[in-house]
Image (tube, rainbow, N blue to C red):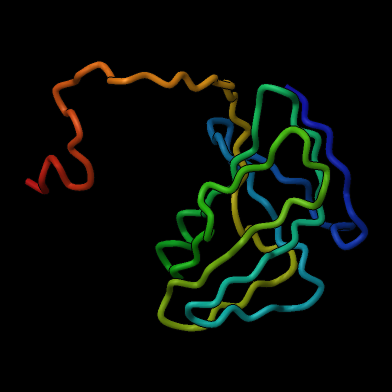
Length: 147
């Protein structure tokens, strides 16, 4: 599959997102910040990627956290997974939140998130009086316990 992309002026010189290994499903997104940017504890900031994409119809791009940043620094994506729709042509931005214990510095070119190209299905909602029953029923959060 091919996804067309455009490098924005502040993304010049950065590597294109790429898969880290032959079996990776997410491409690492570099941060296109022009200078180091500090994210304080609890703060959310949009991090530019310097990239605009044309996602093919029937697909989306999901923006997800990088596990090492989450584990080591508490750096997450605030709207995980973020979605890039097929009709969006603006810059891919990463809404980063610092859930860690200390300030975190985003440096130009650092791999800040990953993007995954995912097929989608469009659905039509049908209003009914009752839904078919299941074993789970209406059991919600924590319905199966922890042990």
